[in-house]
Amino acid sequence: MAFTYFFYFYQFHLHFEEQLQMFLFTKSYFYDFLSRPGGLTDYLGTFFMQFYFVSWAGALIIAFLLILLQYQVFAISSKINNYHKIDYFLISFIPSFLIWGLLCNENISINILITSIIILFFAQLYLILKKRAIRWIFFLFASPFLFWIAGGEFWIFNLICFVIELFYYKHLKISEYFVLALLMIITTSSPIIFSWLARLQYPLNRLWWGPWYSRYPIVSPTTFLLSWLSIPFSIFITTILPETSKRKNAIILKSLLFLVIFSGGVFIVIGSSDQKKEKIMSYDYYARNEKWDKIIELANKKDPKDPLSVTCLNLALAKTGVMGDAMFRYFQNGIEGLLPTFQRDFVTPFVAGEVYYHLGFLNTSLRYNFEAMEAIPDHKKSVRAMKRMAEVNLLNEEYKVAEKYLNLLSKTLFYREWAKHTLSIINNPKAINENTEWEKLKKYQFTEDFLFSEQEKDQMLGLSLLHCPTNKMVYEYLMAYTLLNRDLKHFYEYYPLGKEIYYKKIPSHYQEALILFWSIQPLGLDNIPNMIDVPVKQKFIQFVNDYSSEEYKTKKELFQKKYSQTYWYYYYFINQII
Image (cartoon, rainbow, N blue to C red; front, side, top):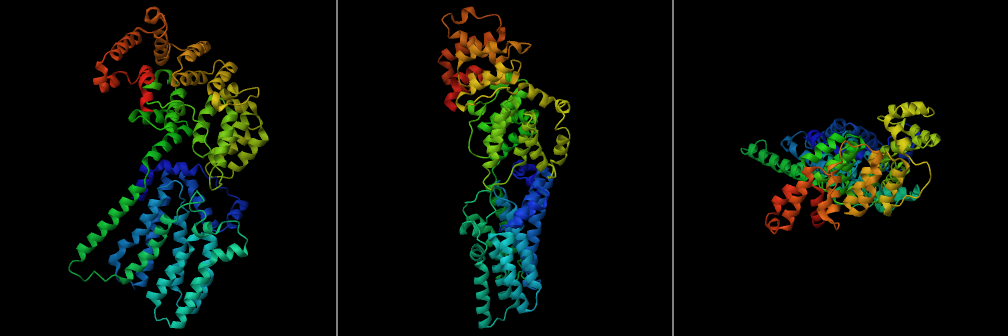
């Protein structure tokens, strides 16, 4: 179930998480993780997360770890019950379902699952130690050790050990209860003790609740607590429930238990899923990997509405050469769906950076990717940003800087071959120009410094077009910018800038904008040049007649169906929707 879910229905969440890490196969990288509490599980989590690059591998890892967690819970509970009450096997699925729900959040790390597995492994070791003195010595050292390698969830080990002592070994004297309670207090205070002894530079609340289970340092611990406590609860509850195997209604009870647990699990997973984000991530993934036809295919199934998805769609239309003919066949939500405003987060700059990279604004793309990487809340480096920054510095002929990024990427698993190949041609301009995309971008890039202005994007596009008049994509983005702003005056002024760009015919939306511009001039429709196709003229006249009549107000759906794929409909109506 978990494999099917993450591979078929949630794969783009995996790709999104993969791009926000950079696992390096180096000793220093490993030692850096070991130097902080919870570092080992964070290291293992990042190691597994790199395999999200291949969605089926990521789904397989998550599914395997969830099954392993369920097996460990069942193994401990069945051992405590002397292998009776195996009818309650289904209860062991509760922690796996809860953690599965947590993993639906792209900001919750797989660390939380790995930590639970490590804790249960130590609990299994505790369970096989027969001598009490040895067990308690093991407990005294294992609990603080778990805090250091696994983080704030370590105290779940204490609770499980308490349940084991109470229901498996039993027969404790009052003095032994006192010793056990003292051990519990000492070991549970590990965050305080380590914070004082090791001078840890973390707030105490972060040491208790993490600190590496979530990408954000400050989170509500409620959901974590629920999933953590479900582990000792699933073990404890089986010790107090009666056996059902000898009852006449055993089959009914098992069926009810199955229904409750699995329907509850499905409810948790579905309730935790965010298909809206999954759709946005799919657009971003395809844009990142330049799968333009996939983006258009997605949009043909259902119009994207959010700005980031529309940004990726417009980029795909431009890259496939149909922007001027197809842009307004899809929903448009203004300039934010063309060139998103810079946001201080780790999502929007990546998407906007893709657009600026393909437009030839290489330094702007570099800045956006760097800012996105630095905005990642857990301070990890991003392979996506590193790769883009290496490319831009290579094209800028900043070979030493590019080499620094490429050397890091060469120590990763899935980007190693690309990095090594790029390193081999780093001082060979001829080999660099053999890459058709890089050759084109070097032609587009600015040769003089200028200050990029977020508030004057049309002027930035204009400067780029003046620098390289054959840059078709920049020209189409400039035209799209004026059209989305309903700025027909500047559209008409900028339109001749495309004289060096070859079109077999004037793109449809440009014709629609031109005829609309001329229609509001003093001469009206009487002197429209012959450059406008006859079908476009006829459809515009029909649009004007329909819009002028009162009939369209009572037949808005019919009117929308008839004209929604024209620029005229956007010009007059979409502002009401936005």
